[in-house]
Amino acid sequence: MPEKTEEERPTWGRNLEFILASVGYAVGLGNVWRFPYLCYRSGGGAFLIPYFTMLLLCGIPLLFMEFAIGQYTRLGPVHALAKICPLLKGVGVATTVISFLLCTYYNVIITWALYYFLNSFWTTLPWQTCNNSWNAVENCSSGFPGNASHLQSASQQFFDRKLLEKTDGIEEAGGVRWELFGLLFVAWAIVYLCIFKGVKSTGKVVYFTAIFPYFVLFALLINNVQLPGAVNGILYFLTPVWGKLLEVQVWVNAAAQVFNSIGIGFGSMISLASYNKFNNNILRDTLIVALTNSATSILAGFVIFSAIGYMAHIHNLPVEDIATDGPGLVFVVYPEVFSTMPVPQLWAALFFLMLLCLGLDSQFSMAEVAVTYFMDEFGAKVLRIFKRRELLVLAVCLVCFLFGIPHINRGGIYVFQLMDHYTAVVSLMFLAFFEVLAICWIFGVNRISTMIRRMLGKDPNLFFRLNWMVATPFLVLVILVSSIVQYSPARYGKYVYPGWANAVGWGISLLSIVWIPLGALQEIWRNEGSLLQRIKHAMMPTIDLDAEDDHPEEKKSKFPLIAINGHD
Image (cartoon, rainbow, N blue to C red):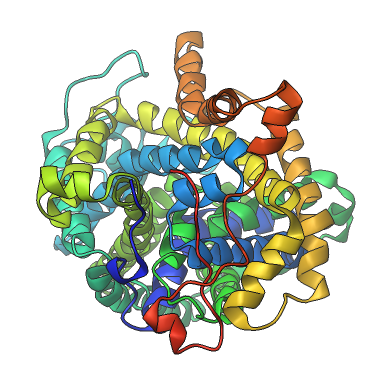
């Protein structure tokens, strides 16, 4: 099938829309619930040294690389990577699969945030006391129970017994939580209404969803630092433990945090950049997105630990007894914080609205990866079936909604944790390594430089070229090896998954990883000659870096657009 021409592909209305969409995707829930705790646990202020080192050597070069690939080819990750390195074209399919899998359960977090948001308007917040119908009064504490292991806080019981109605394990599905079923549908309806027109609608929505969280974070910070004990919490967050810098795992954690936070390897950044104008300044955009993401993580650290310090003060507990990460931080600890503040309903509503915005931005980008794949692969065929792009987006959203239903059963939290562990932890690093291998070493730094010169008018500097050639692939390989060596089966709190559940988890991982060897075998099979000749031919890119395109937009530009001639 002939490729779509440049005129047929929509572009962002303004460059600011692309920047906000990219910032919105990168700045997600992990900035709020993972980075602060990781920083505190990995040496406090000392952790910022390996963190910014890894940002400089790994995060920024890889983000620049993905932006360049997407903007140059004007294709989603599947077709862009197939043209850059046919041998590893399966990496593009794998990124699309992993984004689809994430879509199916990431919206569950948005569903929880919606539930908490709607419950924030009670006269007395429902997670504030132990005298509700869902509370187990005999082991319920209106504050943090500290070392009393037989007690649970009221906010923990609200999360476990009201929101989730949690069963004892993944073996007990427990039936659908119909309230969450309805809210999951609402969450997907919101996503659909924000992306159904593609970048034309998403580009307008991100003006609110990407900017509003900063108003809430600054408002919370101003409020929190005035609370007693807040300074102690911030000191726990920032006090450097220099000895931690000698631990290899701290550096690996820093690299993994940078990698996961920016969103390298999911295909979303390639998709977002594919809607740019050809000569958009992606170097500037890379620095804005990467630095904004990191600054937001540090800002969130101040917000979170000032509140944790306050809770430690009023309950007379050590900070480490309250500090945690993951969903427990935003759905258990922070709701407890609001319970003790003046006008708790206002702060709770603002906080959970902020979580909605943070989650929706990331969800937009992941859903767009799947839509972009179908449009790039099938184009007119898809439109003949669905008539309009809006109906294709609706079909994608409905399928993701259906796959999300197991997560809102009463045993759904165990399914959620299993999916998250084997998708976002196990699969991602394999994908990232092969993406870097395909682009940096097989496609080659010289070709990447040529692409960037055609778009920006000059070669990337020596810093980027050295990182792409040596530092970045080495760091990604170290993270991958470390992930394999330190692999542990999925857990949820004290619950240990049965063997069959972990086997299912590995099956979920393979759903994305398996496309890499399958794509390589298919490409080798379709070529001719000896095995070595077939492999060598499969490693050759199908992008013609020398030919000019007669696209009228590029006639106006001093940088010619290259023709991209190859197979689908």
